[in-house]
Image 1 (cartoon, rainbow, N blue to C red):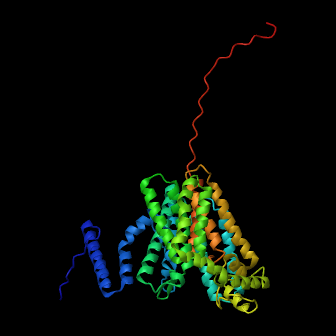
Image 2: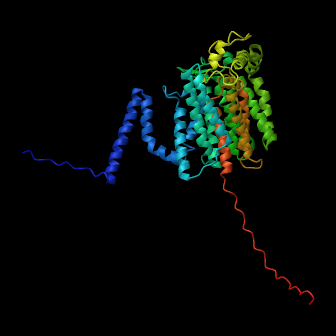
Image 3: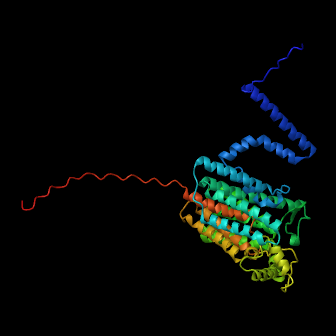
Length: 475
């Protein structure tokens, strides 16, 4: 008979055993990261690093969700098109989902929320109309993909517009917006200096890495909100360190717009400056900073004038012809449109019906957001879209002029005005940098509405004063 051998059983409740097992797992993960880096598989190395840091990241996400994951999401928005993850969307989309979960959990723990803004119900109506548009869409796969993107953006807007946020959180988010724009500008400058082949006409930046591209117009448009925030900070701050940081950030951001040579973004920057000077309590300081820059930059960069002059010769690179074709398409189906994601089919169907002095070719969108929405969803969809932006502008009225958040209101007003302007020259319906501004406006409203009411001093009791005795009548 073979004697049985009893093996020792580890005591998992022992702190020493837990520490030993944790050390073994940690060493294995670190060794795996080192091996994958040595093999050149950075994707798996990053996954292992994420697994290693997951306990700390989960704790940070639940405690400070506006720093991580939402802060990281905000910083990566300008790089959105470069962060594709196979066929599952982009890294920013994944971070947006994580932000919804983390901020939703944070709001549940705090047991606080704000009443949803009117704009949220309008965006939900727009989303439902977009879903209905799939029924008569000529390109159902593209329509489904567009609707999924729009639904994720509306969901992010819904959660963040009602989740609790205070002034400190709001200013932290604005800081991340500026940092993301600065990082994008620095990256663009690095690319244009190290890869001169990534330049187009007049030496403008054209980022193309593999099958991933960033349109120079969208690249520059994503910097408008950071420019507005940095400019307002520069004019309103009194701390030397903050003034210096805002000045450096503003210079880098303007450099990012200049290397793109985007006409719409250059004019959008002028609109940002004009709105800030008009609304700021420090308009004289703003004018003294902005006017010399607006005068000298076109003289130092002659390509700006050449690009502006070219717009009159080519009809804005063929945009005028595109708008004519789009208007013809709208007249054919004015109320319901051609269906979600049907703009390309609509323009291709009417391409030969309209005389085009500067044709842009086939398979192209209108390069005008209102016309794009009207072509696909008709005047009904356009009504929802315009009403949502009007509601966003009205939402800014919640901040009075003497409020300490007035500077953020001025910056967001300038950014929204600039984005509305550039929207007449490019399609912005589902771009995250536009929705980032809309979400931040909703968060500004929440920060003001959820402030603790000022304590009302207790009324002092009136001193007792004995009244003189009245004589009886006839006494």
